[in-house]
Amino acid sequence: MAMWASSATSMPRVATRVRARIGGAGSTGRVVLRPRRRAVPRAAPVTTSTTPPPFVDFDTTGCGPFPLLDPTRGYTHVSPGVCDTCADSAEARRAWVELLLGQLPSHRANAERTAKFLGDECPPDYTERYRAWEGDYEEYLAEVSKDGVPKGAGATLLDMVDEKERLLRRRGLDDMFAGLKAAENAIASVLFHSVASEIDGIWSPARTIDGDTRDRKGDRKGDDATAKAAMIRAVIECCLAGNLFDAGAAAAVQGVQVGDFCEPCVVEPDSRTMSEEEAGRYRLDADQLAEVFARARRRVSREECPGGWRFDSFSDVVSRCRDLNAENRAAGWRRVVVFCDNAGADVMGMVVLARALAAVGGEDTKVALVANTHAALNDVTHAELLGFLSTVSSSGGDGDAGDPILAAQMERGRVIAVPSGQFSTLLDLNRAGAELNAWVEEELRSVPAGEDWLVVFDGMGRGLESNWNPAPYLKDGVNALNLAMVKSEINAKRLGAEVYDCVVKLSVGGSK
Image 1 (tube, one colour):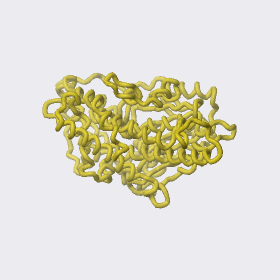
Image 2 (cartoon, helix red, strand yellow):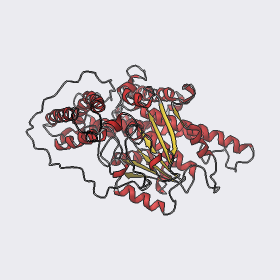
Image 3 (cartoon, helix red, strand yellow):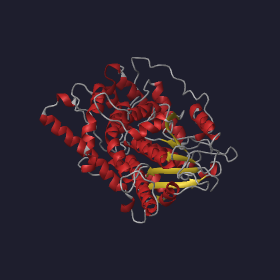
């Protein structure tokens, strides 16, 4: 596909850098996205020969309620359905325990990948530590599944995923998905420039209908509004495709049939050392990679969904991005907080969204991309987000060009990255990090809480399994946008939806 051609030429610098960490004897240099098996072999606890670093708990010093919450409204992160009944129902807890146990084969595969990724830095008993952790976690989940727990005293889903991370650290396993995330971020950095270029071709602040720089007047205004709406739709579809493209959901991967979802090559030798035959294979892999993402986008396209997406506030989002507000200021929102979910194509979608919202809102708009402070499964961390932003916005020494629009936005402080203070795959706004809260408090001095603020909840963990209905807890007027794909039966059932249904849900603080 012609629009993806540039991805093949932008890949070597990133791929080579990743190879230095992932490469090794017998390495094929491929990211293999395979469906999980249903059977879950049980692992007995193992005594390791190396004592892991002592770990008591995550440091949450300075964490507190998110400043955009109304303190009188009793915020809780839980969503309707199974999530908020876990504390009361053993049956509800067992449903989530079954799902969490079903993730263990994926965890095991990614622990092996990360051991290779770490290379000489990998502890010699890494595998034994992982096996011991499986036993620890199975024992914990068996305990929380028991009957006879007083109502309200049972473990919630947040408790279950939090304890997973604590048990990992107690075995000295800080980031079990480090290898996968590095590979996925390399893939996403390859795709980013083609996606950004396509978005700019639809609408950008500097673009005019005739390609000149004159002010738009008359029919130009209508043409510009149409182009902007098309751009917003493309951006949202990229966000949803990134959520589908996420390697963390086997069912979603199987839903995009391109061979075996391809096996995109992200680790290749330096192009200067390639033979002509090797270079040809490399370009094919890059094209396949782009094709997979393009198919993911077609899978989530609003036009392919009769009547629109399952939860669809697209027209409201477009109206807000296209029209001037009551004070005749630029369209869009003046302050945006984006809670990012997974590494790779998912976080790429969030960066594309931040870039677009900053462009729509103009010079007075600031967008904060917020990621976990600590690693949790394949969720992107703040440090990884910073690395991704640097890669796609900076010009490389070998002539690779960074994205000038994003680079300018970052230089002016209009797109920034902020740590969330969190260590979970869910999001509890009652324990937002000190740095995030300080940024929001500072911005509230110039932009009071209300309709000029937007909070984006990306993915199932942050926007479906938690914070599905944040509006009643936010300060009046603050907008909330849930962006996700439903990728598990348990979430589909509780929301009255189907697996693969898309969520684009805009709500307003203070509403029910």
